[in-house]
Length: 352
Image 1 (tube, one colour):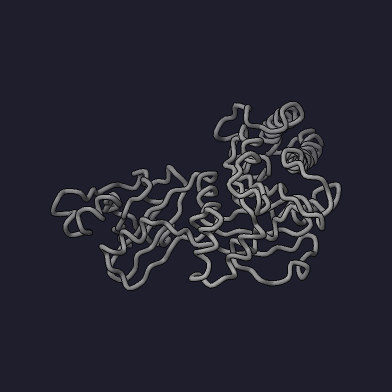
Image 2 (image 1 turned 30 degrees about the vertical axis):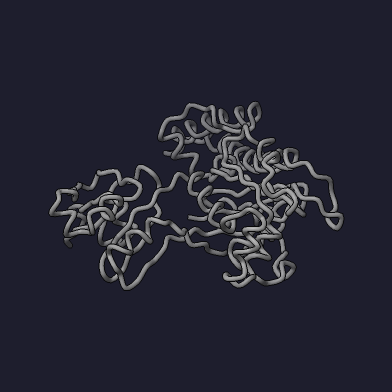
């Protein structure tokens, strides 16, 4: 899963990207509009450590969340088309708004205004996509082709979407069928992507939740963090970092806070595969059936799926692993349509 970090110029979005991914290059080296930087962050799930104590694997693999930093997205009055194309490939957005004071950084401070501007620019980019498709369909539906009826249906859908965007600014209140949503997913609309809001505060504001509260009616998770300080702390030796965190009243760097917020926004859950060779965490959307989770591990597991042997993670830890859980009746045999639950430890049986 991939989250794109976006923000207006001077918001500190690239500093945030550096702070969570550990990138240390000079940001000016890739500030060409449309260029993309990719970084990964491990999902440090404490359940992995608990299961590892029981399974005693030779290898532990945490789940990964990808983050990208797009250059030049809001550098012009209109969203850069190359950057927008890369943005549409992301699964979700991290919207960074400036809330810090710095005389060296130009511009006034108004996080709500900046967030509204970001959302407005995303809206305009979506509206442009929809209107250009409508123009093509209006010409195409006049021709008697095998696709004429389907194109008329799509045209009607997009005209409804355009009206909703014009009036509301998003399509959250539109009632659509599953087929209609399937059609819209092909457009990868930016205003439909789940998001996390990050208020980039100054060091003196740490612990002050007033900025986040001012954005609190939003439906996305909201974090307040000081990206510049987080980047400096990340560059310290871990043994030296602790006292600085304690002085600031922090228990951890904010990378994992952002990861948890992203998982919430994307509605992702974790399941685990555990053996004496490897313990591995996997991220999947909530509501994923067992056969699709099996395919996440390996495509052959999905093609030849027979059953899933499932133990709740808490039971796996409490009763001592596969053997004892089986003996105590804690293992369940589930079919391909079983909806995987957060924390499940799963072994896939398959045959090809």
